Length: 419
Ligand SMILES: Cc1cc2nc3c(=O)[nH]c(=O)nc-3n(C[C@H](O)[C@H](O)[C@H](O)COP(=O)(O)OP(=O)(O)OC[C@H]3O[C@@H](n4cnc5c(N)ncnc54)[C@H](O)[C@@H]3O)c2cc1C
Image (cartoon, rainbow, N blue to C red):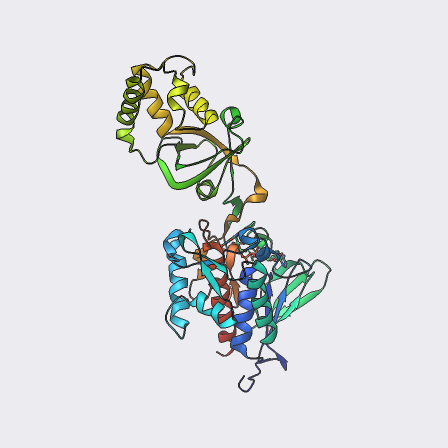
């Protein structure tokens, strides 16, 4: 490490306070402390008794920490995210993804799984947390746990200091702040004047009307699922596994659709995704002909045997208004095709908040410079991660944003001290 440049405030060292020691906060701590090379007091204040607990819970304990093909277009507020990614790439010394380079510098080794999902080679979220914590400590950042910030007062004059009040009544002062509290509590700390929308949990299972799904509990089907608004307009579409639960539906496809779902929407499950919609009736007629060739009696239930699980077949027949045991007639094909291609489930809301991976909403991105994540109206205040109104589908994109925004803000905060 080169000679330490100490940056002073009234005789003391400049201080950067990072509120929240989760994914974005720890990335900010590493990048700030590395950039300051010992010249700035970088402190991470974490409400929990340890930092990084949120990271340990990700990817079922394996931490899908990024994606090999990150595209800003998948994020909410995509233009803002693209500008932040561009700024990060502009700051980087080498080509390639700057977040991946950041982790490679910390010593993390990873491997790619389906759809570009990146997991640490050790297959444990703890290895991601460990490289972050040890780098932060080596570069001189300090962890302060059991410190829940309850109030943030911004400087009253240019060059003044921030005052952070904690739940135990203590107050700390800082020259710059990175707010990295995640989506739940950022609202309580953000200064008036920065618009903050209410947050709601998304990226989780959906609760639907239960009359159908209660008979399908724990059944998985591979299909395509569309989310349609009350006017019938398709809001989003996903292909993948749908897991029926007694309260609704789960699975990655449903998690992704939950970002856009509202009570009153319809989920339309395509149970025959390999058959095009306009070819479905033809497919069923051909199947009927094949059965007829053997001269066996053919009930509606028997017609679906071998194509759908019995419980799913019964639900489809119920939806089509057809009694299962009656013989299959030519006129049954049209309602059956409709029920198979767009099996409807009425959305009532989020199924289980505890399973939701992110909160939608947060600080309005318009109030921030995407190159530094600094509040335009409050110099020295940076907001990162889920505290901003940014979220993305499953696949490592949410953590990627947490790291990227943390790295940007950490760099910018210390660069600012240097003028
Ligand atoms: C079960 C689960 C699995 C997930 N899996 C994945 C995955 O595999 N891949 C992926 O990309 N994303 C995943 N996510 C989403 C990802 O974890 C978040 O997007 C990411 O952690 C957000 O980072 P953050 O730093 O903004 O918030 P967090 O990581 O939540 O960190 C916020 C920190 O701030 C602390 N804090 C809050 N309020 C205060 C306060 N007032 N004072 C001091 N400290 C405070 C919290 O205790 C916490 O440590 C998952 C989420 C969940 C819940």
